[in-house]
Length: 484
Ligand SMILES: Nc1nc2c(ncn2[C@@H]2O[C@H](COP(=O)(O)OP(=O)(O)O)[C@@H](O)[C@H]2O)c(=O)[nH]1
Ligand SMILES: [Mg+2]
Image 1 (spheres, helix red, strand yellow):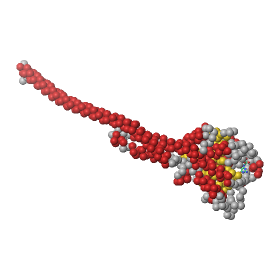
Image 2 (cartoon, protein in one colour; image 1 turned 120 degrees about the vertical axis):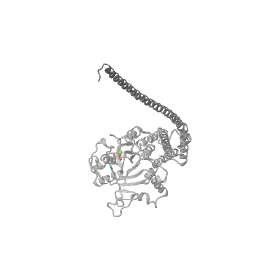
Image 3 (cartoon, protein in one colour; image 1 turned 120 degrees about the horizontal axis):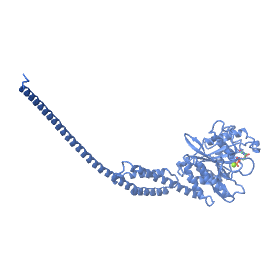
Image 4 (cartoon, protein in one colour; image 1 turned 180 degrees about the horizontal axis):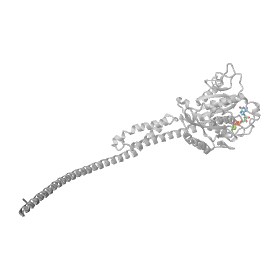
């Protein structure tokens, strides 16, 4: 179960591997997907943290998940030293199926490494962060010691891609991805406690009056330049929430030989907290406000990969335009398919075969349902675009109704009429049969009467003959003096 590369960095270019991506998504076609990415510079412990996500997910958070041992091929490779490990973006080859409240979701892990070194061009780095921003629903940015101005600017640049596929409706802020800064070897220990900070909370571990690092970076902005304040506001607009997780240094023994020595206990405890925090704040992937499944995400990944065919990552505006088109096309196709299906059902029911006037009454309610299906399945694009799709959809529905449904209704009506006249014909035949049967019965009765009468006659005649015969016998006897 090795990790698979989905974005490879070559000497002067990069390549998106759709086949590898699909091999993972094909395993969970119908489940909503949570894409957790770890981003940042190399050799800062990203893959190491991923191995703990894998431990947790493999054991479904059972009590001993943290202590469980993974073989080398059961995790993203990580090691000491300064040579490159992950180049580009790797995906874990197995999605993990887990529960989010009372439904199943599939978690897909992404290990993304921007190199920011002399051998990597700006556009190669841009490709990694842009693609990661497009894909992630939980984007974790790994950074050493503190958050600096240039990092915020970099994040703002790539959050344009996050925005390019997000709904612009202010009511949909909650459908945006989740962003977390993971601070390694955090240093300002007199002011802040280790652990999770965001706009609502901060940990309270060692300090009497601990500060909130989120406020320090994002909210306490009175003294900073307007431009830098705007950067912070724009970043916050791109995500549903921004969290920060402050981690201690793992200890020198671990740094020197991390395969043999565990990190210090404090680090282990916080690593455990970090993993539990991420796994209990799962955010599913959405395009616009709509949740995607393994199957529907594949279509988008293919579109984005196609846009990169000439080895230039497209600008965010192009991604926005093409993704918006794709979403509206899909919503409109689904709506018209539903319209056709409903008419198929209707044409197979008693409601069909009626007069054209009667049948036309079914059109408006079904058209309204269809437009509603389209509208509720899309959230990207402005009002003009919606109006354009709606008018095309109405035209298509009308044409389908006139050329297909009305014709079939007419045919069904003819069949119905034929059936009616056949039924009448059958009724007449049946009546004739009953009449014939009745006259036959009458005739049978008459025959029976004749039979009885003739039997009686025969019997009467026999009696007469018998009586006559006995008279004759008596006469003869008397003649021969046999009788007294
Ligand atoms: N200073 C420091 N080093 C770490 C930390 N976590 C891991 N490391 C070290 O960084 C090395 C590289 O880890 P890796 O996960 O491969 O880094 P990646 O390149 O960011 O994926 C490990 O072997 C550890 O020696 C940390 O929190 N702080
Ligand atoms: Mg790595």
